[in-house]
Length: 355
Image (cartoon, rainbow, N blue to C red; front, side):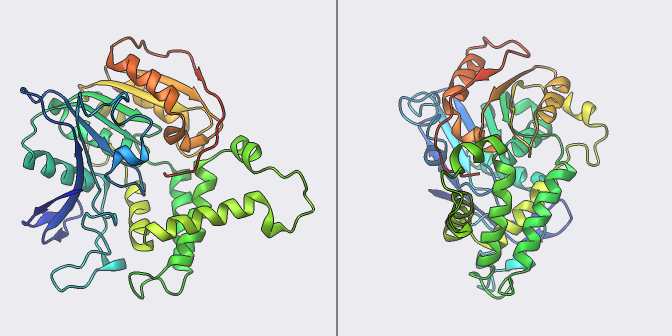
């Protein structure tokens, strides 16, 4: 992991500022002579900048997005807890701001990406890719600097965060607020975070996915030992070991802020300004980012193709169905895709979430 420190005031969309920001990032591969092989990845809510770790079905030697061919960049978003400036970062007074950290928006996250791009002296991006909150960032960036983005892949994302999505996020924040240790120190709010993650899992997965993976042969077991119950607890505890409640709380608010039309005009007109050749991918069972949201993107982005994959995993399908994504992305990069291709069928398989 590398870091870039921008030691000037970083002015946020709401007018507040951070005196400086640190951006943690990973790079893989090397720039070619004309700097035309840049692939930039925007990550989702609780991921980090090591894309080869959490999206290894797509990135790595011998994979579709191979560092021997591409110069791949993934930056940890500000507000997170994986090296970039966030609620848990000791600032100039050596104390983290925790719940007093200023509100951020998706546009603020993109502004940090822009600073890093300038620092790395990269003028154009051959492929910008993101899913979920990462897709929201990629979409915003392609609106702010359309001339820099040649190709764009948007997976399980939207033009604005829905009331349903915001309701899920508010429920998670209420769970964190109910933990009386939230706000008392960097380790505060862990029990609330466990509950919040359990709530989130219901939006990341689907009825079919739970039925296939968490069904019981013997329903006489104590409730606490049922697969579905232990799975929810496991996922919450797993996240609480690697993430903090303050970043999680803040980043759910960032997702809620997403609206490409804010202070710009009609969403369809804003999307029409994207000049990148674009692939939009939806997941049929996704309840958090339903496919009608991706169809809207494809309808109004001028050079967009849309494809839908069939997966029992709901929103988490973007992390799991990498065989299908490899096939789809490969066709797009080789310019073989046509708009509204048929659904790609995929096989059910076991996987753990990392949304």
